[in-house]
Image 1: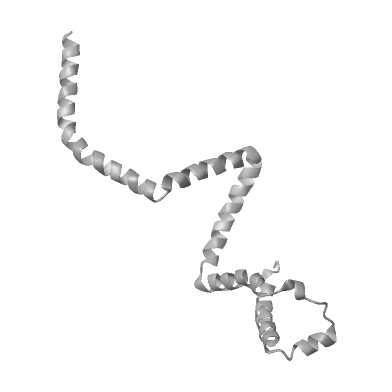
Image 2 (image 1 turned 60 degrees about the horizontal axis):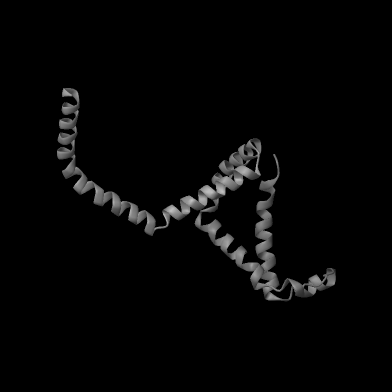
Length: 142
């Protein structure tokens, strides 16, 4: 009985000491959780978990290990692609398919290629293509 009374006294002392801390920290925790909810962090976490479940059902452990290794390399690639010049090029390249009518493309022979070179846009496009071609040898295995 003495032990129980001591424990009850300790619990009361703890509650008395913790009350001021709880009064200030609980509203802060609630505010932090509200901020997370307002910024859709919980929705993103839920979607991420659902996606991971789908991945877990779809791929074997070995396949997922390979995907993980690939993601590490892709992360390095993303680092390289985030330079302003790379992003500008990628944005322009992404808009290109919507800016041209590929259905209007016709077969081209040597003479029609020569004739197309009188078009300023074709000349400029060939210039861009040649500049890109200069960088292609870097893709060869050394």
